[in-house]
Amino acid sequence: MRVIVCFDTLNSGDRMKTSVSTLPFIKTAACPASATLLSFRAGSASAKVAMQVKEHLESCDFCDAESRLLAHHKAGRKGLKTPEIPMNLRILAEAILARR
Image (tube, rainbow, N blue to C red; front, side):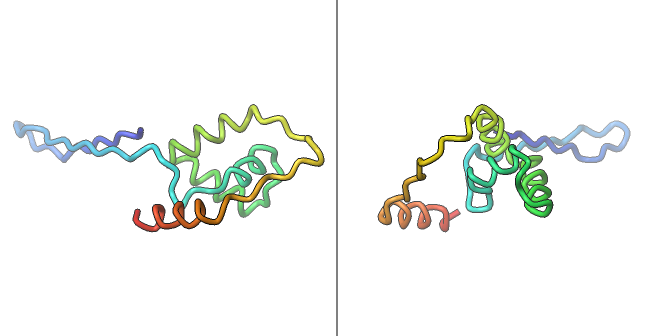
């Protein structure tokens, strides 16, 4: 969870005001797909995509953690196809993400 602490400007003798907000540790609709993170980690993403992913990772703890986890991914299993997400699960996930 990313914690943001803001400090207001102080005049001499004034008390400091602080505010704290937290960003949730979740993947959002704005986050790149795991396959995109894998291609970024492998260095096979286009320059434009790599720049977008790099900028996103600087502000998203969830994707940064996922990217670090994907660094341990072993590529090269030929003949295996990633299964499609079931349609009812896809509709549910899109509805949940749309509410955010």
